[in-house]
Structure formats: C-alpha cells, structure tokens
Length: 164
Image 1 (tube, helix red, strand yellow):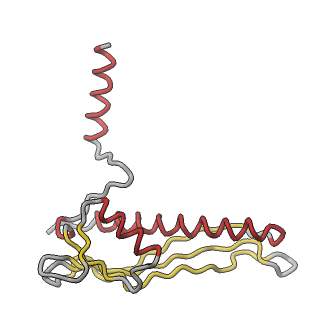
Image 2 (tube, rainbow, N blue to C red):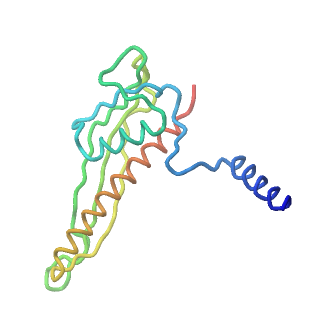
C-alpha cells in the first residue's frame, strides 16, 4: 500500500512541476487583479462568459475605471456565418462560422500592456436543407462553443503577456 501512496505522490509532484494546470485556471498578470472590462455590450453572451471566467480566476471586475484598475478594452466582437462550399445545384452545403475579436489591455496608469490586436477563430459545419432544424441547432451549439473557445484564447493571450 505504501508503494501506491508513493506513486500517487510522485505523480502529483511531477504533474505540478511540469506546469500542468486545470483548464479553467489561468495565471493572469498581477496588474489585472482589479480590472474594468470595457465592452461595447455588457449583456452580450461573450461579455458575460468573459466576466465569469475572469472572476473565476480571482480578477475583481469593477464597474468603472479607477486608480488601481487595469482596463481590458474589447473594441469589437463579431461572429458571422459565410458559405464554404456550394453544390452543383447552387445550394450551400457547408458554412463557416467566423468569430473576430479586437482588444487591448492597459494598466492602471493608462500604459499599454498589450497593444490593440485581433484574434480569429473559425468552425465549419455541414448544412442539409432537409434537416433545417438540426442544422440550426448545430449552428447554435457551434456559436456557444466558439464563444467559450474565444474566451479561453483571450485568457491564454493575457497569460502570455511578458512581465515588466
């Protein structure tokens, strides 16, 4: 039994030493401990998901900019659908969902930590006009997945910010 305990302890030590972290946990810069989230629409699903994930990572979201708060400014978030493939009968067979995001990060003094930059994620899906309800449900699920993936991508980008 002691050998099993040793193996479990060894596994825990090795997994923590290699930098492994739970998927939802992000190591955000200390400058973001208190952050004002400047978004065009606070009630958008993306803004709500981002706010939840920031709070889950011990970031205090403030209602307006302050002396100690960083500013995560979302300049634009846009999700759109475009035809990807068209059949010989001029009918769309596949679509691509595209999510574009532009953001920047400022510290409490107004200095730019991350200059304005864009992120883009895409998802492709098949479209069958015989199963229109299923296709619209699939698009709904993909839109939600794309939003969550964009929040994760943004958090990873914020984590990668060089420390000063």
